Length: 413
Image 1 (cartoon, rainbow, N blue to C red):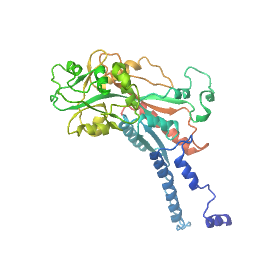
Image 2: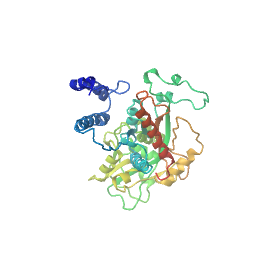
Image 3: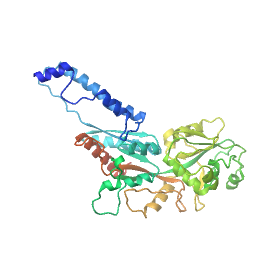
């Protein structure tokens, strides 16, 4: 052992650069633009950085006891690539299933790496915030980006090379060309649980009555407007108790957009928002599954809630879903066929763009379900978040692109 190595070991250092405690504290506290990093992301980074460091220290201690003269074969470890995203809770189950299938696919293809995929179901609002602050490689959202963020989408009609600096702010340098891609279509249904409602019957609503209910203008199930839509049923004299999302949600913004378009009362009292101020009598929750579970455990079941189609699979229950009259006056429910019809009607006349936000809400079609919506993924044309020249960071981005190629081209998903 040479003198330099001996001195390094004696002083407790090594020739490679160490991660100081101050650097680690800064990493855990500060995001790309000096913003506080969310707690759940700090935990991920602590697990990803501190635990491997401890494992390396333990391994070094074990290796000192190995006879270097012995002829042993050590298995080369396959590199792990961390690919993370946050956002929409509506389509979380689909993304989780797709990531698991992608991992199996890579194993079957004998890939030279393993993708450590992590998608955290937060909300569309949190997902977009994480993405813009550089905490994630991608984000999933059910709503559009803000008007201010549109400046980060490069023009589609310019065949010449573009000077990216013309379209980005010096204070937000990582935004080097965002891309918004539609991934999944879904539907938002109306779940109800009414004491005294005839078994086997279906509640019928329209956009106007639904908006009045969700702003508190209609508060009883036997209100004249509801009774007229359900002439064959004697509606019970029970007070309506609503539930809604309390966090920032892209699907909630779509829902309030629909209600505001059909109910003047809702537009004036609540308005369009991803985090509306619901009536004080509403029960609030931070996920669809949480609210649906609450709905089924009520001792006095007279609630109504904005329900997402994936909740049935999420909680293993088959909730009662209202029939909703669309703009053509047709009775519709949130089914694959009614959502597909809405999507095909819009997609047929849509050209590709970097900011490819599609709305399939309230499509004028006899079959289409009115509260249908798309979920999107946010990516970048250029990823310059990482250490220049880092081969691992480069491979992470390649793995990210490979996953979304797999997602968008595999029919089994």
